[in-house]
Length: 371
Image (cartoon, rainbow, N blue to C red; front, side, top):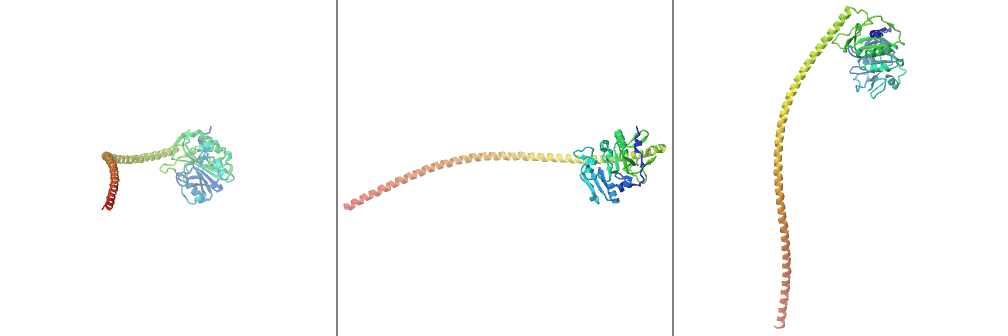
């Protein structure tokens, strides 16, 4: 079995190496001919930094197609008419939120376009390359690949690098010092690698027997507070100086960790002070709430007393009103009787008046007959 470092042999394709992007995490080194010869760029994994693509557009205008299912949009940049975003990630088989690179190419009708492919997908690269047929990448001029968590995926990393190497040659490698390192045989290797490949059937290539990385004028630490990771490919100069440089790297890493721990301690103390302040505020609020609750409860008791008193008064008023209604009904009955008596008196009076009138007429007649 090949050593892992043997899969990282660097090749010269007779093209100047250039750096596009920021001088930290987000910048990449590649042969300029890969950009000169490409007609469109496919980028998988966006994040918050697209300085590589913005530098690329300053050099050459061409469409950049971004794919990422973990963000909703691209950062705002100039010349964004050339930047196309699809909220979809990378996988071999289509899922609800991911799809295959070749299907994206077909969807965009770029089958005949020369493509530069850039992939930084936090581990999804293993499934994609493991299942892909590398012979389908004929129109891919170059690949910029970030290979993650290599120590935990060493066998998978061997498989996909071996597969990629059948179609492409490695033109540059850089260790991402945000990640850790691991010991592979007698070499210390970065756990995350930034790799640039060129199509071996497009570009003439010649293996570089031994190369020490990083390249001083092109490579920069992803984490500026830690020395860049040393790589010797395949294994030149594994001497005391090699390990001494790694000791310096580890010391800078430890210093950065100590600083980070110190900052986190400060942050923890700040948070602790903040929580203590909030706890005191909460205690005061709870006391105020208890007082307010007690006052509201007393108001509630007084309100209930008033309601009970009002209910009692209402009940008394109902009884009083009912008694008055009964009195009024009795008065109505008595009034009806009086009315009836008055009507009877009117009848009797009318009878008396009638009788009196008849009596008067009788005596007047007798007087006129016998004066």
